[in-house]
Structures are given as structure tokens and as C-alpha cells.
Image (cartoon, helix red, strand yellow):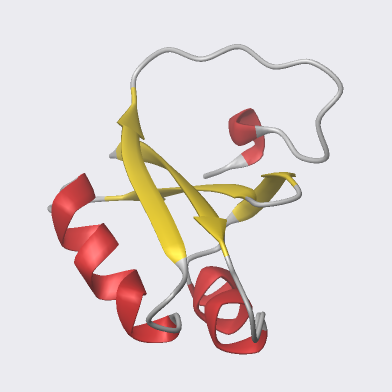
Length: 83
């Protein structure tokens, strides 16, 4: 099971609900204000990025990355808490 980070920049309208609802379905953990992490099987960063764009407006930005090594300090959540 791979660990993914999703970071977004919601511009103009800033409608967070659809994205937050989907992140909740993924059991994602908020790490920083616009950075979430979650674990998934049988997918990749490109596929996840394409999937999540349907929950964003056309002027928003998103990055999804598979993470193999990370460090943090003074964050809201902990990727180690994911199942």
C-alpha cells in the first residue's frame, strides 16, 4: 500500500466541500492547511490526480505525489496514523 500526499490551491470560488468529502472517503489525514495524505493500493499519482480534478474548479491547482520518505515538524496530522 502506497502513501500519497495531495496538495491543492483552490482559487477564486474556493469550494472545499466536494474535495473534503472525497478526502474523507479516502480516510485522508490533514497534514498542513492544504496538504493531505492517504494510502491507496493499485493506483498511481497520475491516476489519483486525474480523479481528484473532478472535485475542483477549472482554475484550481493540485499535486499528488507518492511518498517513500518524509519528515515533518509542527504539523496538524501524522501520516503514521494511517492504516
